Length: 427
Ligand code: ACO
Image 1 (tube, protein in one colour):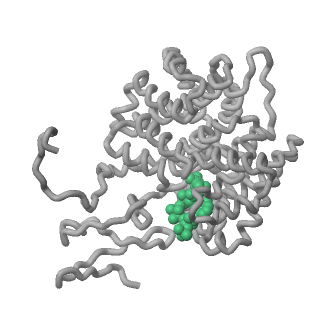
Image 2 (spheres, rainbow, N blue to C red):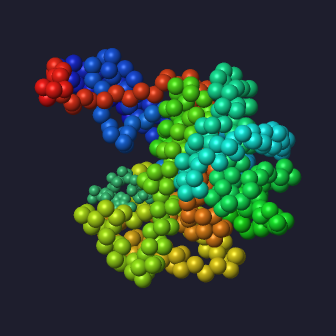
């Protein structure tokens, strides 16, 4: 196999090395392309562009494989808990008992959020979308934790990391509680990380909090499945903002905004709204399948298709089973689940979807579980952000430790050539 490619341009030949990853993926290293040839590349949506070398997450979209630090998502979802997975993603290895205990203890020490932050939250109308609120609050945290910006050592980084892992769930819980008109509260350090998040979100002022193992396990699994997904839109955003040394919290705030969009993390909300609309319209899945295939209709089957997976999204398989289990265990009979299964069955047999390799993605079933857990639809993407937090942190840390240069793509300019200014009254 050749270890280089040769480009021929204007009668000259240029060699570019082939870089090979540990899973034998090959890429052309074009770092010297512009200086050697004067050329740049154009690749809207970065469908063919590798932005970095990364040792965090491996995914093979053709084979439907997803691994964090070498461990399969199936095994992690079954055997690990979310905090272990967070540690694994961020620091590269599964923690032993002492490391995990210290990590959790360090997080607990940081679990308060400055009371002044409540005033910022107060300024938002109740109708504000939780993703906008969460992004703003994450950014506002910088003002109360200025030392999280100039991180020049691994120690500084560690402190910024445990701080955000501690405070972010509080912001998530407050965002939900504000929507529901519940008093803003703090957690309970005697609980596990995910159980504490659940309590912060749902504890009612007049009742004792009762933990439900089925609910906590399902939440834990959902968070693990969302924890990282290599260089997707929000992760690339986090890395590129971080590459300007803007700081971890600012990078995360930008990542949250990127995740908000319905083509990315916002799809889980869009899926549920779509399923509810189909149900309200009489449950005619065929009608919506036809709309999804009609090129004159902007409707897309939300939760279907993926930029990288051209096979079943392995997370969707796990979530589908989990959705069945959770609904069964909680004794919920949700017609929405039947509509989802019907749509999936039809799509998997339909040449339009088969030819384009469009399979259910992670979001197709996750909303059904969130709904069963009592999480409002508008909060679904916030739950995704909560799960993705360790992945964003891991990617930001890797980018900083690798001393990656500031992200700054090129363009091909297609606008007007030079022209002279005309005074307003002469135009
Ligand atoms: N419904 C109907 N047709 C679709 C769908 C869909 N959900 N997804 C893709 N297609 C069609 C496109 O119209 C296009 O058809 P064409 O070749 O005839 O023009 C073809 O499949 C390829 O689609 P692209 O949009 O070019 O694929 P791309 O990789 O750019 O987009 C994306 C991937 C954005 C996820 C897309 O499949 C989509 O919009 N899906 C619905 C939204 C969604 O579920 N997003 C969540 C993604 S997972 C995540 O972010 C966690």
